[in-house]
Each structure stands twice: as structure tokens, then as C-alpha cells.
Image (cartoon, rainbow, N blue to C red; front, side, top):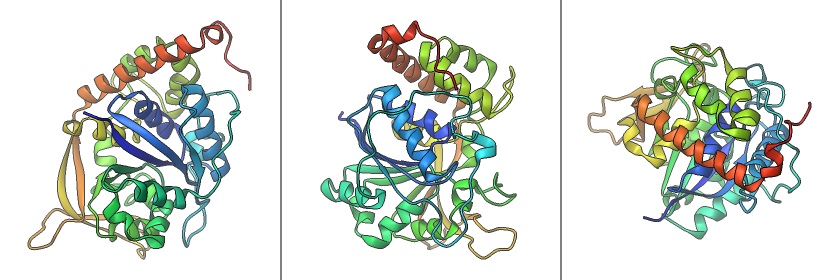
Length: 324
């Protein structure tokens, strides 16, 4: 089968970076473009990180287009305390030499979906500002997209607040537009991604992956949180990419999802109702993850990417990592 065509809308970000490695390395996916949004750090930082990742991983032909710096109606938020000032923890990737693509992410999303209707899946793993603006500017993308998969939300509890997950809380009005647009949103949220924890056994396998491990994976996951034999930080965004590669990894259930935009304590909450009655669901909501098979897929794909990096830049493999 031909690989699934995707556009990744993201805010790199440690877990965005690890998701991009997975998408790049999978033979089942073809990245048509990466669009950036302000989120984990500001837009300049997320875009620079995407550019650095593109050259480090070796997919120079994929366009990267910058998008929205902040939310539709609210002050900007970020998660630099989680991802570090650069957004990539302690990773020190070389500066990018290739430029960002001109234009705006919203227009790139619209034109890419317009050019190949029914064939391109949009994967949003950051705040949903770009996607909402694309819907407002060209509502037909709802029909042109093969699907929309997001990493965001939760039907139980949040991480930005007790009720809300970060990507939704960063721009609740945008999320409300996206969920109400008339397509079925595949929502891979915290209820799933909290199961994708990096244990010491996982980290040991990453350490053996040459420059990919030493320059990116380990500096990211060790910055993200304490790793022990039994648990560690969850690499949320990779779950959305893994679902596209192998949907059997994640159980999804139909639901009606509304986004709270007015609540004093619950702004950004994805209010999820699995009791459909005679209502048409607007979402497929992830409820469980096969963590063992998830890590098998992730680490096997990472190992292949690592081998490619070593093969393409053998002279760099003998050099120390760049200094701060």
C-alpha cells in the first residue's frame, strides 16, 4: 500500500520532536509539510526547532511553514518550564541552513488539502489555532481532508489545569471551532498518552542509537522528567503519529466532544459524552494504549532513523556534539 500522506501542524517541543522522528522514519507515512504554531515555546522557537529537526533528520525537501503566534482571543501561553527555553530540552541540534517556506501555515494547509482531496490527513499536535483559521477561511477543508487526528484533550483530567490539557487550553476558542466544524476529530488525549512512559529500559535502547540518541532523544527525554525502571515522562505527541501508522495500538470510541470556553475553572476542558443516543458523534476518542506494541514500533523506527543518520554523516558521528 502507498504511504498515508500527512501534514503535521505542531509546536516543537520535546514530544513534538519525538513525534516528527517517528513520522519521518515510518515507511507508512509521507510528510507533505510541517506547519508551526506558537505553543510549547513562542512561534520563532517552534519554527526554528522544526527547521533544525528537518536538517538533522535529513528530509530537506519537506516544506516548513510558520503559522499563528498565539491564540485567537487569549493571551499567549507556553510550556517553556516543561520543554526548556529552546523547546528541545537539553538537545543541541546544529543551526538550520535551509529557510522556512514563505507564506502562512493556514494557506499551506488549505492548498495542500485542496490539491489532493480525500488523500491527506491533517495531524495537529499543538494548539489548534492554525487549523481553526483554516476552517474559517476555507470551510471545504472539512470535506477535502482524509481525516484530522489531534494530540489533545482528555475525558478525565488535564495537565494545564485540573480540567484541561495544554494544547486545548492554549486556545479553547480554536478548539471549539475545530470540533464543531462538521468532521470527525480523532482525539488522542492524555487518557492514552499518559501510558507512553519512558522507562530506563527504553532510555537504554535510545542511548545505543548513535547521534540520534546522544544529540536528540536522550537530551529530550531526560530533560522531560525523571526516568526509573518502572516509569518516567510520557512522550505524548508520538501517540497521534503511532495511531496513523497502526490504529490497532489505540482503542477509540465514538463520542460527542464540546470544548468549554467560558468556565472559570474548566476553560479548555474537552467535555466528552460517550452516551450518544440519537446524536451523531463528532469525535473518535482514544481510551487505551497498547504500550508494549507502541514502544516496539517507536524504537524499531527510531533505530532505522539512527542508522540512516550514521550512514549519511559518518564523519559527524566521530565528532562531539555542538557546544551551547
